[in-house]
Image 1 (cartoon, one colour):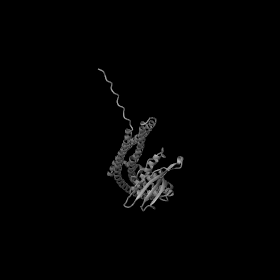
Image 2: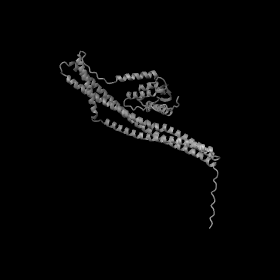
Image 3: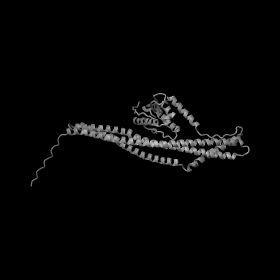
Image 4: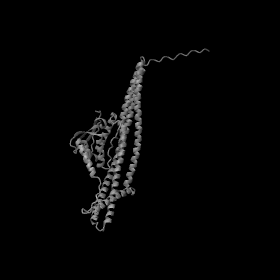
Length: 425
C-alpha cells in the first residue's frame, strides 16, 4: 500500500452544512496490462442528501473521469473542476501516485465547494454508492444519454401506401439534412452583446492559459535545477567524507564535518523541491487545467447556441415542406402530419432558446466566480512560494553558520611567513 493522506478542511456550502472529503490509501490493483491504482474516498458530512454521516468508497481514475463527464452534461455551462492528466509511463511511481492523489482530492473538494455541482446526484452517487450501485448509475446514464439524443421522426398517415411512407421518409431526411446545413451557415449571423462579451472572455482565457503555461515551464526548469543541486550536494558531501577518511587529525575531522553538512544540505534541498511542488507547482498546473475547463464551459454555451440555430432551421424547413403540401390533392393526411411537425418544431425552438438562456446565465456567473477564486488561489500560491524560499534560505544559512565554529576551533595556527633575507648594499 502506498503511503500518504493529506487532510482537506471542511466545506460549508450553506451555514451549518459540512462536507469534508479526503482521498487516501492509493493501492496498485492487479498486474500486467489490467493493473491500475485504486483510491479510498472518505466523506464526512451532515448534509441530509447523504445516507450516513461518515463513509468511504474505493474508486479508480476512470470513475473520477466518469464523474467529471457526467457533471459537465448534468450542469452545462458550469466550470467543472479539472482532473489530473492521464499518464501511460510512470503511473505507478510513488511521486506520481502521490501527486495524482492530491489532485484527485482537490477535484472532489472543489466540486463539493460548488453550489450546483455538489447537488448533482452523480456526485452524491460517486461518493456513497457501492461498486454495484456505481455500475448501475453508469448504465442508467448511458440509457438516459441515448434517450436525450435528438430524433426526427416524420409522421405519415397510418393508411398510407408504402410509396407514400418512403416518400415521406425521404422528404423528412432531406429536410433534416437541409436544416443542419442551414444551421451551419448561421455562424455568420450578427452576434449579440452576450456573444461579444463571452468571445472576449474566451480570448482572455486563452492568453492566460499561454502565460500560465510559461510560468509552469520555468517552474519545472527551476525544480530540475534544484534536484540537480540536491544530488550535487550529496556527491559533494560524500567526496569530502571520503577525503576526511584519508587525512590525519585534526584535518580529517573538519573534512568529515563538511561532508556531513553537505549531506544535510542535500536533504534540505530535496525536501524543498517536494514542498515547492505541493505549494506552488501543483496549484499553477491546476490553474492551467482549470482554464481548459473554462474553455469547455464556454464550448457548452456555443453548443447550445448551435442547437438553437439547428432548431430554427428545422422549423423553417418544416414550414416549407408544409407549404408544398398545402392544397395538393391526395396529400391531405401528410399535410396534417406536417402541421403537427411544425408545432413540435416550434416547441423544440422554445426549449432550445430556454436552455441557451440558462446556460448563458450560468456560464456568466461561473466566469465571475472563477476570476475571484483564481486571483485568491494564485496570490496564495505565490505567497507560499515566497515563504518557502525565505525559509529555505534561512535553513541553508543556519547549516553553514553551525559548521563554521567547528572548522575555526579545530584549525591549527598558521605558521609565520618566512623572514626576508637582508640584502647587502
